[in-house]
Length: 232
Image 1 (tube, rainbow, N blue to C red):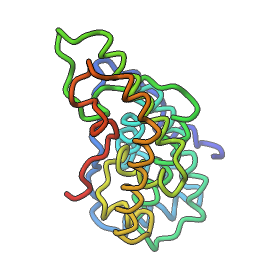
Image 2 (cartoon, rainbow, N blue to C red):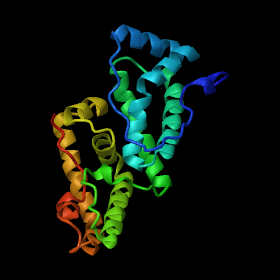
Image 3 (cartoon, rainbow, N blue to C red):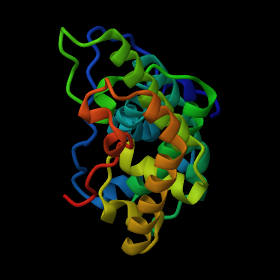
């Protein structure tokens, strides 16, 4: 990133009692200000780039944390994302919102991270209620294995499926937001997500079968793939 790039505020900080950070940054006062920061950053202005990082750091951390379930790893991925952003800014064009481009960079980075490591997955990631004190330890292990398998199978999807799924599951974008980010029709988004969901269920079938019948309803086959409604 050149001299002074390490000064960007993406250093790891340790967190106790980690909660998933808020994903939605406060808006700029105008598109002209964002354009100015992007253009100055592309020219090597470290102060402008620090302001971009401050603006979008929570969003990137949130996407990475949902994918990995570990704040330390999420912060490592965030550093990778902003390094790629910094290097890619000279080629960025203003035809589409910066945040859409950033979502694509972050989505690709987190799926790469899932492929590289075997993450410890938070139960919150699959929108499941916390286990009761009476929960069977074997059921908890089976649920954890299923959640981890879902993440890894998402990372192994064909790119055109994986990009759409990662933006919905990890970035929690709506169908319309995914369409704008990937620059494809809304119907194509819905078709890809439905096809990806069927593929994931086929691949995860044996693991789901092994996890029953003792597992609670929220981890049965119809809930194994963590897709949420895209419309908001």
